[in-house]
Length: 98
Image 1: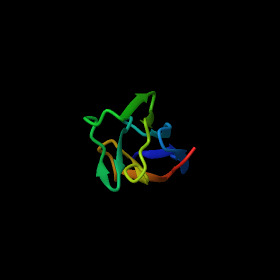
Image 2: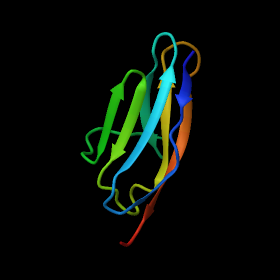
Image 3: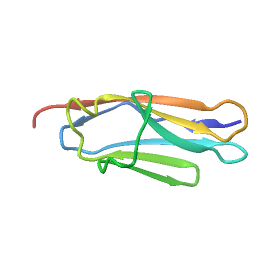
């Protein structure tokens, strides 16, 4: 079954900055990682969100960060069709000002 070996970490980012979350999973077969925000799958149609996947590591990048929209829990979910999906969560806090 899938296992998360690197969990995303809580972050605080200023408005207009960049937030980056990392998540790594392993299993046989290699799990796929999807990202959720507020329990909803993040759609890649939003240009501020980018996901990079390489060698079992997934990175979620949010740029520019917006107040009131991006402060939320983000969750990485790893699944590979064997056993139950596993997830880990981190919170993004957005700071106003300079």
